[in-house]
Length: 106
Image (cartoon, rainbow, N blue to C red):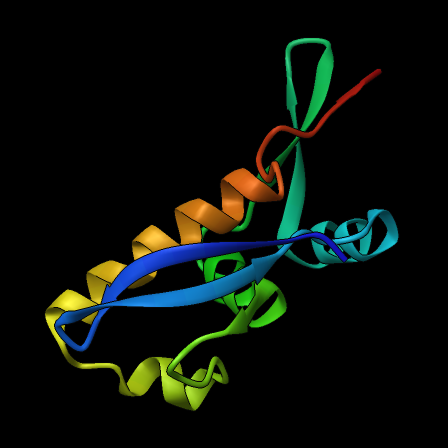
């Protein structure tokens, strides 16, 4: 399993966290659950379900963090700065796993 250490502000201090790259089959299963097919011209593209993919990616790929990633814990985060840090973590996971770059040609 390939991992990457990232440094993010959490509770007002720089905190190291670890994310993982999903394996081939694991990524396919993830995409099946959180992506939907759309047709653009003569191409079929996969686009993320905007309301589910971010939390799903946190639960799937964040393997070391100072907080839990279950739905209740994520919803309990109230600190605005920590909330913004979740966006940074998502962007790291998205880039590391190359999410959003899927395309299927007809």
